[in-house]
Image (tube, rainbow, N blue to C red; front, side, top):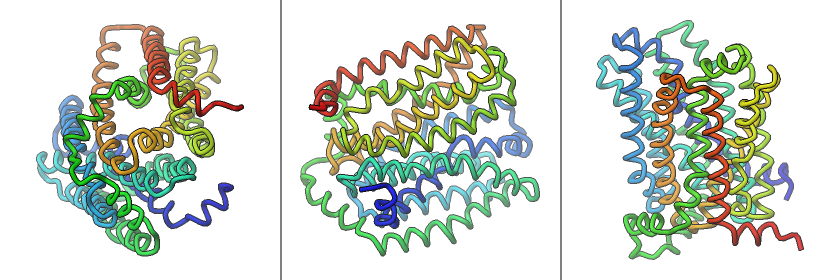
Length: 409
């Protein structure tokens, strides 16, 4: 089935996933960072103090995510999705009325849980569960909400902040969630078979199987530990490299303006790669693709290591974007293939929680290395070596699936 035919035929189900990935932006670091100067001024915080608050909220959300994420395997998808959207609404309202630092922490915590964690979790679980033969295409389309949000929302939020207060801005965000997002979800859920497919999967799940047993079953398997590094490496290094992009640019001879401009190439590459990987997954399987999806990141790191000219900054960012575009689609499809549709919510929430822990730690590690005057070239080589290790370990863990998936005979 062609992309266009598929999108037109399944537009309502796909719009469900895309809307959740788009609205997940309100819990992502790139959007919350726009409000940081106002937080520092109004709450009399230093950068270090706010960083501690943000890291604590992120780590707390990672601890809570496995418990909340598994309920998508138990509750009706309509009920679960409305709980997540409602949580995002409460988070935005808490930010709008956060006149005390305690409310600020609570608001950030809820944004990280409902936005960064559960919104994408809901979208990708629903798409992986609902679609069988076209799973790769569906995940590719739904994941477009991430780069669309990254491209549109910072400009829009900055424009609103220029004419009103940050608290009013969060009030506008809350109104958007209440008046557009939630009614749209109600419309889509009434017009599709998402709920029916979710109920069929629940019926297939053994009644005796509990989440603690599922978690033990997952982590007690050798394959889990072999594929885990390839799952963690891209978000770990992307978070560290993007957070300290100005320092990195200076050491590599790129100006801050150049690296900022290169984000356009990053966004375009992420969109194109996300769309392109879907049909490949549908043809060969996610397991056959997964071990190799981080190779573009490794190529980008080596290019940055040599940094032969200004043009290399743009190609470096594009290569990072390709890996992140591949990953957003490939990982969710892989979970469905390896662990089955009936427990994909439990699996995704476990991996997402570990990933959040990793991204919370990466700024500390990168900051420590920069403070101790470790050369950027050395840091890039360390990052590259982890990519190579991730590729090798993932290939070993999935070698049977890779061999069968890439058999052209």
